[in-house]
Length: 396
Image 1 (cartoon, rainbow, N blue to C red):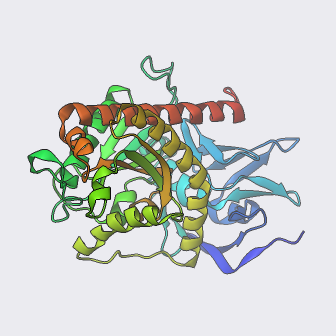
Image 2: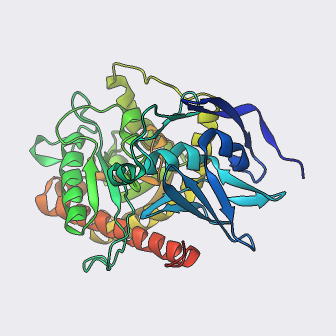
């Protein structure tokens, strides 16, 4: 089979030694680059084991280990989830394009930078020593000596928690939420408690906002790129005015995909209306290859996001007085820029009296945060088991 190339699509590699245009292949349905074409621009060394089950790439003092047919790469204690699998075709090793765009800048953070708008990997003019690079780079999945006694997790994980709305954007007005609270207040309270719950369990967590301030939708997901495993956005639901609307209650968890029902479209439209409070348009829009990369990443993470949503929904539904409305899917803008599995939790309906009282109470907020954390831990445990099966310990 002839190699399929994206029309006029290349990745640029810019170094102090010059600039190279490397073609992008779609032979296996995911963007990839031929490793031999990277040898001259990057000076890397490629080794494929006899039998073709594993490959290693040495670059900038780091050793990247690929298991052919598995969508991840290891570099020391760092594990990079990839879009697509590394593979051999015509005696040539092909590496998933996100290895260049995400993994290399993540592991060698002081030496390489990815420019999404130009689809360009830049080697910085004055790289630091490899040992210093490894020490300073983020390592969200560095191995630990023993399982965490609270969670059983063996790796270090980083979660970005996104309390929805904020500042001039109140979100849901909270028709049946006591105390004058609105969606932005509840989202921030639950988000803070979720961060505390994750921290208590030995998981690093950060917030997109810690105060009553507005963060643009496009910027929220961008918090979850290199040093991040999961993105979790917290919101409060609402129904249009009417008697039926006051009866609807419960929790639902969304992942990013096309809406299938009118109700899913309604929720996405309601949350996406936060755009009207933003005063600036996003800068640095990605070029054609950037869009292709984003689409591939969204498709790859769709399955993982759906599983994360399922596990979180299961845990939260148990503690929620309003009932289980299930896992949903819709086009939330806040999820489109996260470069990892991402979900949005609609924690209840401010248009329902029972849900409103639960959302406004300290006990209800603690229950929500603890249950969401339970779902996240369950997902991470599954993820670590997959890694153990695909790449047994001891292989380098």
